[in-house]
Image (cartoon, rainbow, N blue to C red; front, side):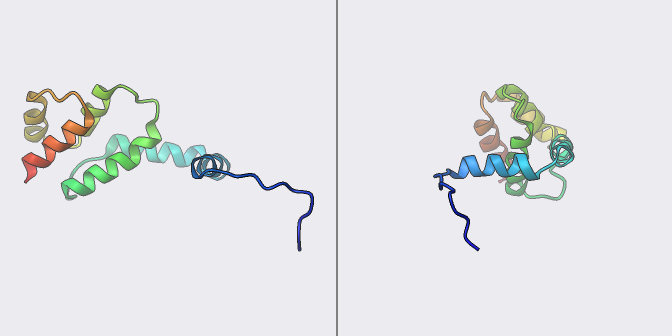
Length: 106
């Protein structure tokens, strides 16, 4: 079957993704992802797995804009002796914090 009288519109990936998420992903889904973000711990993950999961979940808490809050949340997933060591260096960006945490684990 062919649909007539419909104009095709060029849609970017970002626009498509935004539309898809709005239409098909529920508030409950976002709440679950937010909860997962705030409860994320290093546990038995590797540092790379933790970083990847943290950054993946960070997009579900878009209200967190302050770099300091992101850093604190990232560090809260580590054992205290690691997070305290990183905090001592007083990193200013999440990127520096991640880099420092990888150095400590290597």
